[in-house]
Each structure stands twice: as structure tokens, then as C-alpha cells.
Image (cartoon, helix red, strand yellow):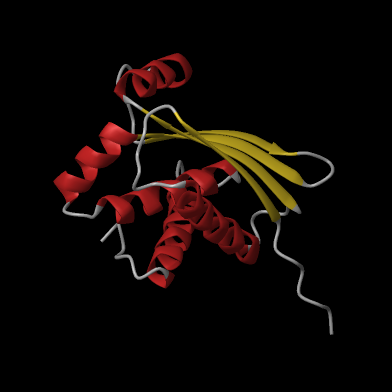
Length: 160
């Protein structure tokens, strides 16, 4: 019998462009790890290591980045830059979460800040690993994986 492959290593650099004491590094790392493990089990991603940066930003920086890279003049909740997997098996990406948008959306959607932050972190990590939601089939795969990871954390389906 073939042994189970070991989960990919995770290197996560967390940067605070704005302070958010409810989102310490250990918590963000735990959510990123869960997303990475789920993606490895899903089989779409084939990497032995993942190197990501996750930056928490304010409204101005979020808007500036979204305008520069997506040509949209507003701050979005999560912005991900996926750089692919190199020949040695290391996946790389940058994830940016805009805290004011996160807070506003959580309030508007009746979610706790931590539940919504977990979802956006997992969503961003999956994008950094190559998942997307441009086609309906790909969106279903990504959303199903997100929902399963969140359910394991006792967080309600964000798409329900």
C-alpha cells in the first residue's frame, strides 16, 4: 500500500498595514494551513511547499492595489496574487485582506468578524494555489472546498 503523502509545508508571512488585534498571526496561519491541507487532499494542487504573504490593509491601500492591478477603483475584501508552482514544487502567492471592507461585510451579512475573516483567508489561499471561480464548474469546486473547510471549523456556509 502506498503511504499517504505528507502535507505541504507552509511558510506564511503576515504583515499588518493596519492593526487588527482579533487577527493575530497564529489564527491567520491556522486558517491558511487548513486551506492548504484541503487543497492538497482535493488533488488540484500538487506542491510540496507553499510560501505566501498575507497583508492586512486599510481602505486607501486596498483601493490603490485594486485600482493598480484590477483596474477597479474601490477597495475589495480580498485580493490575491498567484505566482504558480515552481519546478521544485513551491507554490507562491500574496494575499491582501482589506480590514474595513471585512468589518463592513461581516456586519451587513450578519456574520462574526472572525467567521468572515476565516472565510476570506481560506478563499485567498485557495486562489493563491490556483483555484478560481471564473467558470461555473470551477466556482462550484472552490466553493465546495471552502464550505467543507469552514464546516470543519463549525462556521456556517458563507454561500447559503
